Length: 428
Image (cartoon, rainbow, N blue to C red; front, top):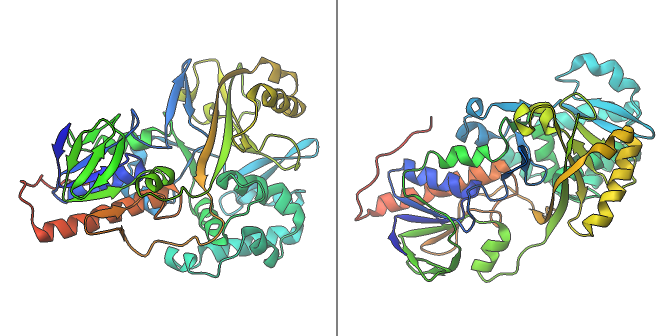
């Protein structure tokens, strides 16, 4: 294969798609090269027996500034979760609610055993702190671990064990919530200012929406890049693609391999999907394990949010645990035993649909987490806009991809190009 373009973007995940669209809107010709058979990277949805299975626990935070700017939320038909969670404590479930959006839940929150009364007042103080200043200011704050920040703010061990660790550790796939305080406050801000939602037809609708705006012949699938060249890239099949600039927008491990670096550490997760005659609870809540014991970290029923996730008369249940190791045949009975304690004999009727073991679900975010000051340029022709360059989240993937595409296009347009430009395109 021999192709020319103005800009080659390696990787058709969210960062690569955002980069390609910005280059295209600038009137230049991008060429998006993807190793897999579909766009989206980690954001993918499979269809199994009529069920929609997102690859691991994935959600969209509607507050994300870049998502609001680049995505059409109405077309995605977003279905929000309840702003809070059901937490398993002892032998029952306790509801935790965001009283800013559910003020009628205040009496319930005041008596909840999830934490002390002082803890609940400190939640309001943490909210004010997380919302203070812009993102650059948030990422410029002194950095420590999230547990150290919570202790400094006076939160008890009870609320850390029963709420913060199961909830936020499930976001970062870090059982002890050993993440940067900056990353923690960023996520807390997202939960406070927007909904946590699923597209009606699965998370893959997000990259599909973006790729649908690309001009014909812009995307090449099933084409792993083997090496970076001075004037483009070489594919694994020996083909060469040439361009005036190249942007690396792959996951961190793939980017490190292309650059001859060691892959950074990552955290894994295992996601079980079950089909059931009915959901174990009726609402759009996330269920958390606040007991500190057992294999389950969280549970949700995507079909409670959207009917498209399961065939008529059935329910889809998603159960998540930390780590991507272990024998599934040994792990499933342990998981079921805990769930049977929660929901009774109905668990015996749940049919396993699929299991996703994802050893590199997210990069480690323990320390040194910061907002990127600007596009990352590796040399005269090569730019980096994936996970090696920015914090891991849908917001930063979209924002940094978009910013990198703008920087590349500005430089190439200033330098001139001998290929006829595309007509600039606008966002819908």
